[in-house]
Length: 118
Image (cartoon, rainbow, N blue to C red; front, side, top):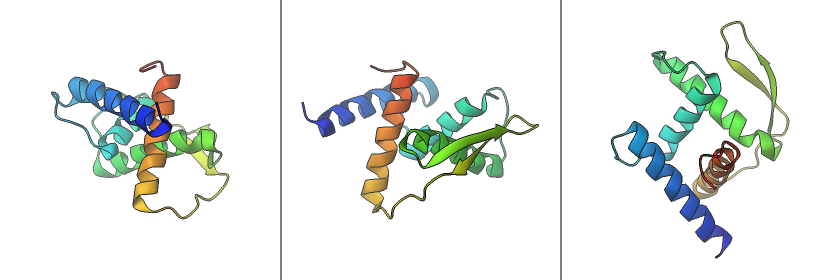
């Protein structure tokens, strides 16, 4: 099985499980999954979030997801419990499709580490 086929298989498994759990089976898109990862990383699961908070949650998720690739490094958790990251290396210019593949790969790795999928 090619790397791309394996990525698609794992991605589909993540979408199916998360969609069943959080969207009554309606398929979640990439942004929704990034948002859920942000909520998970923040750890404040019972809280309602404002629009600005939602953007910050997605930023947390992106930093966490790209940390293993060397683009970000965890810095500290502030007094309100929000994690902060430092940029270690600028992301190279990527086309939209390349960004999507990078994020899907990072999300798959994240959920493998969390033992959500194999």
